[in-house]
Structures are given as structure tokens and as C-alpha cells.
Amino acid sequence: MSELTDLTIASARKGRTDKEFSAKELCEAHIKTIEDANEGLNAFIVTTPELALALADVSDQKLQKGIGGELEGIPLGIKDLFCTMGTQTTAGSHILDKFTPDYESTISKNLLDAGGLMMGKLNLDEFAMGSSNETSYYGKCLNPWKRNTDGANLVPGGSSGGSASSVSARLVMGATATDTGGSIRQPAAFTGTVGIKPTYGRCSRWGVVAFASSLDQAGPITRTVEDAAIMLKVMASYDPKDTTSVDIEVPDYEKSLAGGVKGLKVGIPKEYRMDGMPEEIEQLWQQGIEWLKAEGAEIIDVSLPHTKYALPAYYIVAPAEASSNLARYDGVRYGLRVPGDDILSMYENTRAEGFGDEVKRRIMIGTYVLSAGYYDAYYLKAQKVRTLIKRDFDEAFTKVDVLLTPTTPGPAFAPGEKGSEDPVEMYLNDIFTVTANMAGLPGISVPAGLSSEGTPLGLQLIGKPFDEAGLFQVAQTIENAAGLLPAPDKWW
Ligand code: GLN
Image (tube, rainbow, N blue to C red):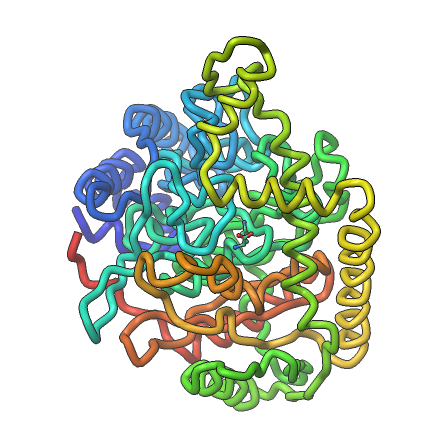
């Protein structure tokens, strides 16, 4: 039955409706691949096969009656940052030890209501802080792709490493992910999958463990652009429980897939051509330009002059918000509690033991930039830079419909290869992706080819606010031209 796990969501939906297989069979096939893979890939923090099978039974009954939902019987993974009722939610952190929510995040509820099967909770960097999944308390997750030059195991990217790895390795058909500075798009690029970060406000943040509230946005990781369109349609909704959720119609994204790019204006921001960028990234970008040109798009050079300030400003805004959001983990309300002589030492012991090094670094930076005397110099200034970055995009979008850039400045690297001496080396992974978060814009990463090391590379499209449909339209053209990547060779 292993071929069932090779199906896309779109083809599985059809096969299931045509009664070629049942939701239960589809579910069982995925449970088996997960069992075989989890020791090697460590993509799941916890698996929930009993729950998935129970949901599959309900799906089969609904399908029998012809009342199946949009994702009825489709095996999905949920990043362990989304609160799931009755299933532990750790955010990849020791401090949320054994925390089991008695509520369901709006997004995972939307997916369950549409008939999706939750196969388990996916690994991630602790509190979504990282670009390699190496900061997870539950151990690193690996990329199913290996480097063909030296056979090295690679990171799947982060923070949504488990989401990207599990989709790429065919353990689930799609997964939820979140993106504060690139955590959907960068892991998608590293694993040959499609990842879209919608416009800020498109998907509800309710029930998603907060990292940096003004930047966090959830979205799907899937194997095709069509599957991303199907999943985002279900995930997106207006939610009064999230005051930043926007009450705007969610279009039927599948309808935009066949639109093509004829007459569309595609902007190429010159500031994304960086010193020291590998030649193959430049070539990939050029290839993307040629593909779109060949389909009738008009290519226009644009400038986003404040791009170079995006990463430094992000590393002020994101830690500032994180230091405030993470103040709630004090050993009283959630998860871990490490006793002390008095309440203050209990707080201190719990936070000292519960948080990992990267999270502590962010809390310290955030507390510093918000402290009296430094607030104006750092936080306020970063917010002003943010406005300038947003203005650059506004200006560019008066001339073009969409922007094309590489997703990452390089291919997937091996665990330990980046950031152990200098954290900034790791932060630089997000150089092309943080800008969209700072401006609240939608961005998608599409697989576009292989590196000289035989590993996937992605191209990124950034769109106008709430124009996810436009992104899917252009992304489909790129996918058609690039062709789908083969499944990674199974070594796990
Ligand atoms: N890598 C970035 C960081 O560590 C972004 C993470 C994310 O998007 N969640 O902050």
C-alpha cells in the first residue's frame, strides 16, 4: 500500500471520492511510514495513530453518505506550536513539559472540521526560534534529502523542520507550519516542498503558541502548489478570537492555479543580489526569470532600498515581543515547575531549567532593547525601519504585481555546520524571507531545482497584501516549468 503515501492531497481526494481506497487505508499506510521513519528523521514529537484511525472511521462514514469535507480522510501533521485539545503541545520546549491544552487552535479546528486526520505533533525549533530545528528540546529533526557530495545528513531548515521533513518524506500529505521570519519558506526550500506564509491577519493566531505576535503567521507546507492552495483555503478564516484576524473573503485558491502569467509584471529587487551569494543561487533566480518570461510575464527591475536593515530590525522586534510573550512561563500556570525556597527562586529555577540557550538569548536581547533608556534607541528605531521597509514594498507594488527572489542564500547544511560559533551565521538564513514578515506580506517558496550537492533549492514570490491567489497563480507556472522533484531516496 506504500504508493498511497505518494499521492498528493488533490489526487487522494479524488481517489477517495471515487472509492479507490478508504480513509482508513490511507491512514494506515501513513501510520506505517511514520513508524518506519520516526527514529531516523525524528519529525514527530508525538504520534497519535489511535486518534487518526478513529477520525478515519468517521471520515469513511461521512464519505459513504457523500457528506465528506474538503480534506476528508487526508493525513496531516500539526506543528507542535498549535494547541491541540487532549494532545500534548510543547513548542519544542522543556518548559511546556506535559502541557495538554483543553482547547483547539482555530487553524487545527478548521482542518479537523474539514475532515483532516491529525497524525501527530511535529518537531520544531524551541518556541519556533531557529532555522535548522537544532534548538528543539526533543532533538534535531533531519532532512530526508542528503548531500550527494559527502553523503552528510542535513538539517530540514527551521523552525518548521518537522513539518517540512514529514511532508517531503511522505509521512503526511500536508502539515501546518508558522513563519515569523521565514520558518515556513526556508524549510520548504531546504526539503523540496511548497510553503506559503499568508498575509498577516489571513490565518487566525488563536491557540498558536506566540513567539513574536506582530510577525507570526501560520500557513501550510505541502508537496505541490495545488495542495497548498487546497490547504490554505481551509486554514484561513476570520476569527473574532484573534483581534488581528482580518474579516476578508477567502477566495477559492484552486481557481487561480490555471491563470498563467501572461501580461503579469514581475519585479526583480536588486538588493536581493548579495555579495558572496553562491553562483548557483544567482543561476536559479535567472532560471526563474526565464521561465516566467517564456510564459509571457514582463520582468521589471525594482529597488527595495531598506532591505539591508530588515534582518537587524527583525532581531530587535522579534526578541522584544518574545521576551514579553514568554514571561508567562513561570512554573505556575503551564508545564514544568522546578521547586525553590520561595516563589522567586521557583520562577528562576523553572525558567533556568525550562528554556534552552537560544530562547534565553532572545529573552535577554528582548528585555535589553525594551528597557528604560534603550527603548528609543533600539525598539522604537526598529519599528521606524519597519515602516520604511513596508513603504519600499508599497512603492514597488505600484509598478509590479509580484516579486521574485531566491528563498534562501544557500542550500541545506549539515547539523552543527552553522551558528555554533556565531549565532548571526544562522540568522543570515532568513535574509530573503524576514522582509515579508516585517511588511506583513504574503510569500511562497516553490521548489525550483537542485543544488550542485543534489539538494533542493526554492524560489520565493512575495505578493501584495491578501493576494495569495496571485502567488498561487505564479507559483503554479514555476512548478510547471521546474517539474516536480522526485521523492528523496529513502535511507531512514
Ligand atoms: N529563523 C528565524 C528566527 O529564528 C525565524 C523563525 C520563524 O520564522 N519562526 O527567529
